[in-house]
Image 1 (tube, helix red, strand yellow):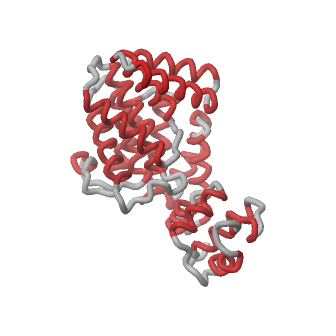
Image 2 (cartoon, rainbow, N blue to C red):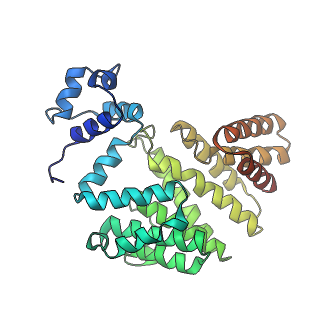
Length: 308
């Protein structure tokens, strides 16, 4: 792939893949002529235009453009996309041949490709083999390829990439799985970081598919589940974190783990006697859950939320 790719080429590629004409994509967003100039690299699109085009294309143009710039070798990009597909659809037990292929590829020895490879191994060992210590080792290898020591990993001075945050969450969860409360400290740090990032007035929380607005759900949910497992009583700060997480997720229209968080908050309200708020959250959480999940998983999260 050529090094001087411009964002207009990415937009055109996504448009063609979606089967849309320039008129279809531009409708109510910008003129067809403007879109044509953007696709030819003659105009730089505004943030608002890219957000609107991303929404219509159901594709995060920013992230795709960033990936293509980082992985100018198209073969590397295809392998990373294949790994992401395994992650997304939970095909972790089938991923080992791809991981071994990437391990022998020089392109995966440094940078973000190396971090993604380490995350793949971390998932494989935790979800398929249940070897949590080994999974932690791989998560740390990915993080320490960028940060010198574990003490330097959790710092509000850093701006973390999507892969950093994913590795940190997986690291924390597996520490908790080994009955070590230190994992909760990492989850709490991640929430603090995400609150700060998503509340920043310079940060476009409504940008399509922004990763931070998705990851906040599972981070918060895992934090509550493991607190319960460790027998730690809920506090006012816990409820504040829960409210903030739900608020930021709603603001960004992210439903990833939103049903779980609403069910947890509904049960907390119920136990405190706030029946109206409890009824609203429980009904909303169940309705969203029935839309997003199958009956078996919905029953599982309802039961888990009721136990917190």
